[in-house]
Length: 376
Picture 1 (cartoon, rainbow, N blue to C red):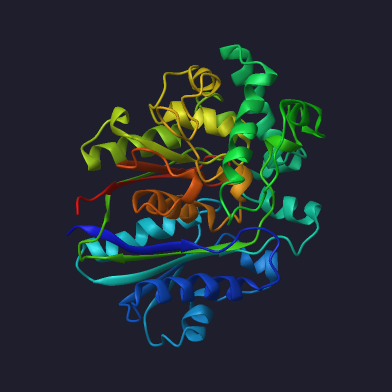
Picture 2 (tube, rainbow, N blue to C red; picture 1 turned 60 degrees about the horizontal axis):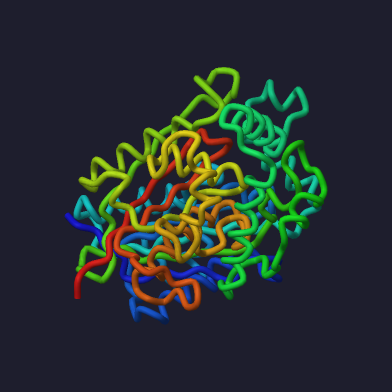
């Protein structure tokens, strides 16, 4: 059975004064008001770690109760930083199988209430225990990957900085983005070193936020046509290489096969850029560009909003923000807004087929979602 989006939205991302349940309520109430849909067969919630970030648990039951939707069945999904994408994929199955006609899908994270060092420690818990024992963090492992890529494909520091420049520029056009700040090449290159060669502007911010999608079996303007997911070894030392994420490659292949498409059919994309090099690596792993050519496409303007293949018109995780449990779904929300002509000043020219790629952990549980705009 075909599955469509009846609506999609996300809250303002950033430092928000609400609890994680309050953020979920904000997103849920907005989508219910926008669509007029108040009756759901099932509810799905994606979050990474509200227990440690906020001390809240049993989130699916809490939000169902707060929305006065009991006794609707409710489920919570966690695949680390791809939870927002994973929960959408799981909810899709309920509609596609005919078990549900309409499902409410929510995702969120509340992170800014903790000191950065504490939040960093929680995020690092998804890394292999032996690597954590050596003192590594997500940023330090991302930096190692970046060094390998730069050396193998002769990418310079200025080339890498273009990701941050593009996505900050796009974020300025997104009223719900966390960061609204214009930056220069010099700003990026002179910003604080986090883990060489990654600097402050190469890393996404800690954010609060929530997203909401309603899936339905009734035809709408936007259809889900491709889904793919895959996993990889948690320890980096067990992987085949460090300049490509096999979980993205395999997830992309599965999504393309389901959709009956190839990378050349994609007209715009939202790619996980928690660290700037991940946008470049992701674009290559998805087959949008050849290996080692992603940074060149960026440099040539191909991935700008008005380029041949816009990537992260929302501002990406880098500028829109990265409430880890919500980001994967927020990418899909951006695809939906683009396809329904509701992206404002960041509207791309041909939002016919959009792709969203989400990374869980350090690329150990990745998801690819492909949407298609339907003819009126």
